[in-house]
Amino acid sequence: MIEINDMSKVYTIGEESVYALDKACLQITQGEFVAVIGPSGSGKSTLMNIIGCLDTADSGEYLLDGVRIEDYSENELAAVRNRKIGFVFQSFNLIPKLTAEENVELPLIYQGVKKSERAERVRAALERVDLAKRGNHYPTELSGGQQQRVAIARAIVTRPSLILADEPTGNLDSKTTTEIMNIFHELHAAGNTILLITHDDSVAQQAQRQIHILDGRLTEVRA
Ligand SMILES: Nc1ncnc2c1ncn2[C@@H]1O[C@H](COP(=O)(O)OP(=O)(O)O)[C@@H](O)[C@H]1O
Ligand SMILES: [Mg+2]
Image (cartoon, rainbow, N blue to C red):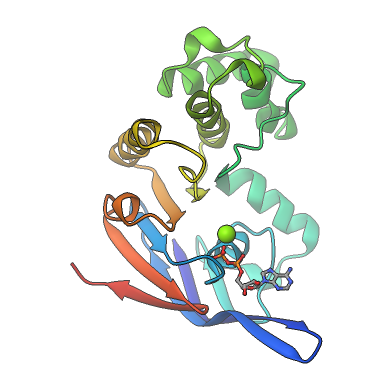
């Protein structure tokens, strides 16, 4: 469902060129739970942004569900992103002026889903992360772990082909990390495809597959 071949991305600052991605290759099959692990500055976010259609590579090929992403215009990319990808970020990225329910509802409004169906799907998504009772709370009224659960509900409410999580436990203590990882395990068991980016070994080890990234180069870790 994801196929990346020889993908490179270079940043040039003054005289210096940094390969954020260096001929990266990666294949992910439907239903897999894959972790990408690497130190700070190794290219993790660059990879995630390209896979999530938030950014494009300088060279190489990216096929998502069999379609070459390079061929898409900005508008088409935005549509693919809305329909196919659910994002979870380290800093939750909830909208402070909206309640938990309203945050989860937002992507469905963008998709033009009608109101009655939105309500039902928001309720189901919040139930999935065990936050049905907190739907009318604002982000500041929730703990970090609860905010991340709202963000996960927002990511899954559109039923994306792929859940992309960039350091989702990076701002959380170890107990909350375990809770959030349990949710990812449940989503994986329910058939979701998950790509989780982390610099935490104990988090990466919980995935089915681990890919190391260093200086923009990917290597599969063999169990
Ligand atoms: N917008 C940018 N401009 C210049 N350099 C960048 C930019 N984004 C990332 N980089 C560089 O690319 C490399 C990879 O960055 P990033 O993908 O953010 O790594 P990670 O998420 O693993 O910390 C780093 O050396 C970083 O400094
Ligand atoms: Mg990063």
